[in-house]
Length: 383
Image (cartoon, rainbow, N blue to C red):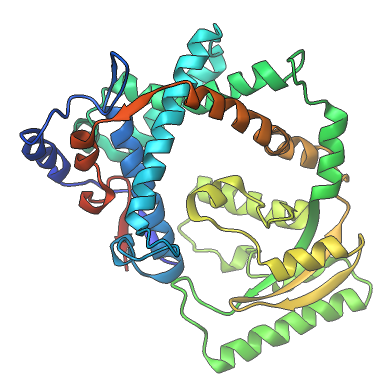
């Protein structure tokens, strides 16, 4: 797997802002009639979106975003950087709509949500970047409180959605409908995985591949003998960590992490939807989903069915399991299901709100945060 970690950034962005400021008014990013909107949130979305795509290209292909920015992505000749800049504008508009609609509806964040925002800010940014964080805020033209407001936007959006679609809302989504969706659109499985590539994406030698294949067949034979898949997991799976294989200098926190991983693999397995999304965070940052070959088999299988699936990067021995074995599985996916069921209606509402807002972007400020001129803000890339 390619290594990506958080780092500092040069103050190139600050210098860029200073240089381009002379070319036009860059004190605001967008106007609606006589109201001018701040640059800071736009800058954050520009850096965040730029870094997210950069990380994905590096993670999957070992390349960088700069290698593809000028590539055409449709028959109209649209360049990738043009589409990315447009997405940043759309994200900014959504942020403004959410912020203003939240206030108009008289909604407030709970104490728990405010505390969660504060914790996210402190651990995810202040502590992660240390003394370099003030310079990053300056590069984005944001204060600490303004940045926290950006971190709160998801909570505000959830409050708006709940206002319309939650209990007592004019378009309430009932739990019975959500449970039906869970049973038809999600599946659970346990698995033995034997990788064909190393952590940097390099394919194993022929001898190593044969060894992994032999293990996969042995794991399958374990199930053929009527034994529980947990036995095969402990004997063969690369995602299960035997105590004698772990480094000797692990901290107690590291040990606990491995123990939780093992418990999850043995007891729960994975719960995925039909698109292969089993972990929303992995999907939102890396775009990672399970292979369609595995997912298609899973939704065609019955509980207890098992098979060996060979993919380009791994051998999988999978067994479909009862998705309702624990109520926890449903509870863990309720937010995602609620989002799916409300997506079309809330999109219609946002489109109406957007169409009623005669916004105009300030080209001088937009050019400052064109993705082609931005260096990484939140990630570093190591070979």
